[in-house]
Length: 157
View (spheres, rainbow, N blue to C red):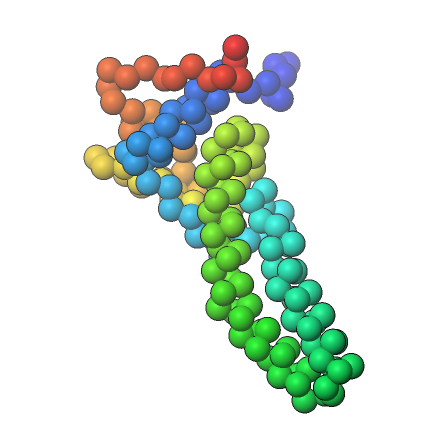
């Protein structure tokens, strides 16, 4: 029985090609952070959201001790508003950055990420490819110029 833990070299090369084509803006990787912000997602981090809660609760506790209940509740309300506006935008930016910096550089992370809905690959002249149902490797092969060869993966040397 073949060892399924072994990664075929072509998969690593196709991920390198995807990374290169995305860097050249020949492939657009659209990220839906709301769908990727799942506890099992390899690009989500609970700490991103927790820092907003810790700051609001800490400031509210300080104000409760110093000024009383009304200012503490007001700070909690303002903290909730800030989280719902600035906090979510911050979390979404962090998820997008992790997709580009972490997942595109590690085949294992990319494969885990592709199991979640929330990614869409687009390139001119090819059909769109959505995670988790789409075949990202076939999409990259179709997006590569006909004469282009796959780049050598640094993981294989």
